[in-house]
Length: 111
Image 1: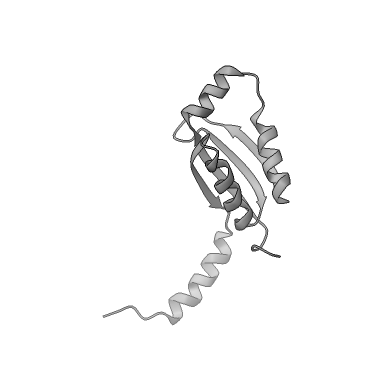
Image 2: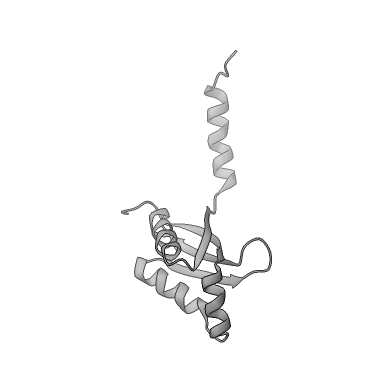
């Protein structure tokens, strides 16, 4: 799979003053359609989108590759309407812990 393996990602970000001006001008717009368009253009799949109250203005849950998520970040931040787009990947903590056990057995700390 070019660009990495398929995984679930959470993208969180903030709207800029430019975007808020657009919301005020057209308060009935459905931003989930824009999110779907981004995902479709990349071949990724949207699992959810919500507007938030808190340090981030929105969260999107997408399935795809990290390269696809990075491309979405680059493209949407380049418009000037979104900033602070942060990408987090869902992980399997049990699998990571199993691998950590191998590292712990092999690693000798300094000193």
